[in-house]
Length: 102
Image (spheres, rainbow, N blue to C red):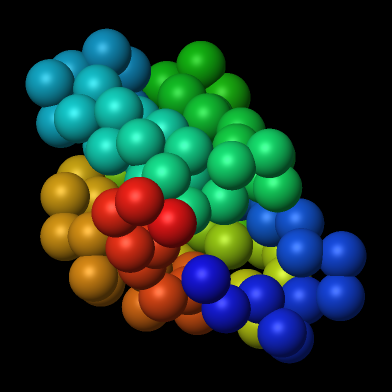
């Protein structure tokens, strides 16, 4: 795992979803799995339902869901979709995958 650019190694992530749809549930499950496998104990993942909190999309200019926003470490990055493509998500987080057994 590479976190050389992140002094404290902690990630702040915000996942925007729309209600309890299958796509939202898949995105949440995928992100939790990726975080546990690659950032165990070094992340804060906030899930925001835009139906319950529509104003939350303004600050980060969210126009589609699900959208994952990596707030820290900088730079801010957005990943749109159900987060099922591990390589794309890890690249967006600037991480290399943890090898099995590591």
